[in-house]
Image 1 (cartoon, rainbow, N blue to C red):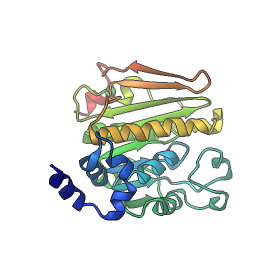
Image 2: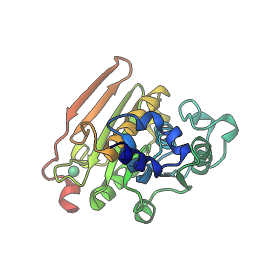
Image 3: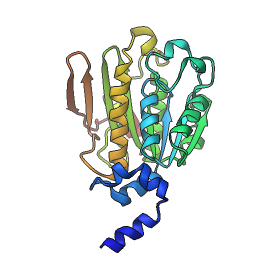
Image 4: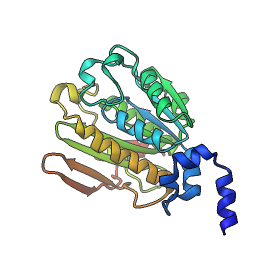
Length: 262
Ligand SMILES: [Zn+2]
């Protein structure tokens, strides 16, 4: 038994064993789980209030390949919640600036920036090589685009949303036939699909940390197949009352997306 464990350890470098030691000693992760993490790939859509903590945690704990797509440059109004950026980053491209920071946190993994807008034309080319897609975007047009793509390609989607003092998390595992989708919950695309809620309604920065960390945690669970998947539920977080409610979300009959994409 000891020999087996040693053999598994042999495949890690000394640096990797040190770096990931606090996770490797967890029974639910171990060397096998850490290898799974290092072999997994996650595309983060949006380097914002959610994307910042998601990217930092996934990088630090050794998800092997991480991509970040965001078309924007850093603005000073981003800095109250987008904790991966500093004042010196204002006007720089978000994706490549974030990736450069992440390389310093963990040079052991593959990091790829996409300084562009995610569109129906480029989504497959960008997302096809990633196992899991994380939605940290700020508008419904992008949210629906990612939802429809992940459903079509049967990829796992971990989605988060924040506004004011509240947030929501959804996990859709489209490899499961019973998985609901975003359109099961929000059937109609809202009137202003490009609206940025943060800009119009305001946001307290800590909600990005709360919800983004939960998203990162859900991604780890999905990669490792541990714990209870959030798939089939919405987590609703109220930062003022400090309540966390898990509400059942069933696959809806006559869902446009499920009917159209099979
Ligand atoms: Zn649906």
